[in-house]
Image (tube, rainbow, N blue to C red):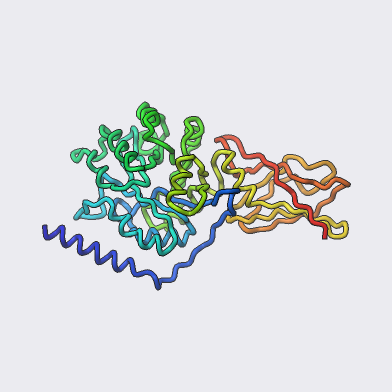
Length: 378
């Protein structure tokens, strides 16, 4: 009994020490997208771990990392089945959320109460986000074999009863051949409404087949870091950003969950966007501007990127009588303007037909679109 009390006292003390960060200096690296029509483009990571499972970072520090990364939404999803970081285990699976929620409010981060249900494959690991009580999920864990999947349907049914949104994590793990396979249990979970999305990107790994499954089965597309180390260490290993872009009406938990339920998400991985055409198209359409300047008959064309994401554009064909360089794809870096000399005959171009080489609407197909051209006579 004294050990349990002592553990609670230590947790409370550390929570206080790590919670007094109001005077700390945290530098935020801006990474922004303009609104995509009626939606805000929120940056989210729905799969992160803390010391309360097999991570190495305190929950409040995860919030501070999210602020520094310019994320809008995070879900701390510690494992229900085990907590190897503590020799004296806490029995409260809601503690990571409870410790982080004040910091999330301070830094303007939407924090969603979550947990990872971690079982053998099949079905593997699944995240349940927007739950109310993680402790209820432990009821369905076989204490003699923590990864036993026999009661997975019961566990996910409870998560759904609490209002949880459930998605399948890292579809190729844990498997002996390191490959993604759709098993009968996954079809059962889908049919029973117990699997609403798939994590097609986990850290450095993208699974094209999982993207196709999302398209085939009308599931939500997700990309998450699954970070266990510090975010700085994770970034140095991966070398690029990983996140889910959420097309939400506003920056609230309710609006984020509405977007997830209605599949308004895009995966961002390795400077690529992966998603349905109706979701990726408004992101680039509102990020890239094309402007043709006419200064006393001298023409100059500009691509203007108003986002923090690089776009690689390949012109498919030019309007009749209009000429700019089109022999090579053009990379327009974040917040950058790229200009070309131009010429035209009598007709002013109204749009350019381009293929975005780093935007995918199927595993093998890039987005093609017409970018409106604004003509300015100075």
